[in-house]
Image 1 (spheres, rainbow, N blue to C red):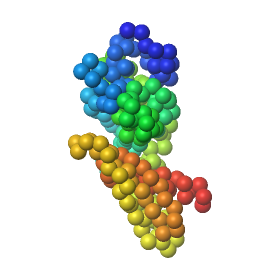
Image 2: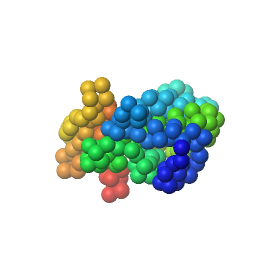
Image 3: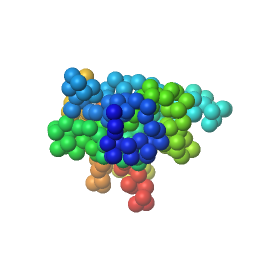
Length: 228
């Protein structure tokens, strides 16, 4: 099966040429476009999450051989969270080749953090199935790049950081408001907005409400830090 020019270019950006092109096509197919003859990427997403987890668990152990579990766990979480996967997906323009149904196309699915993060995990699984763990690990470590070097800083809890920022300026703690909940009951997507006394806000979405709150806090903290 020949891949389109766009998907072939995407594989070059990823750094892997597939022996089985069907794997990458499946990894890029969202459930909104699936059919009995066109499987979606959910099973690959499940596997890719585990492959990514093993790669990052191994990496954080090697990077700091003296760190204790309490230090390693937040670093690991920062590297495998959906937002981190989505960031990598945006860097390689994964959204441009996502295969979406009309409903997701019209609601900006190519830019959604949840969809991009899921697809990135599916791509990792596709590489693993196509070429094995060593190749998948090499691709992941290259794509994640310097995130591994700055993970100790990234692992700080953003909700706590934002609350400390507010308290230092005499403000009440930030408020988190659920704006929307979409998707099926077994896989909801939450949209949350964080609000400050001073009027600043930021929004984020995730499949777990707390993760959406963390992502919103992180986005607002980054914006506030640039303004200080």
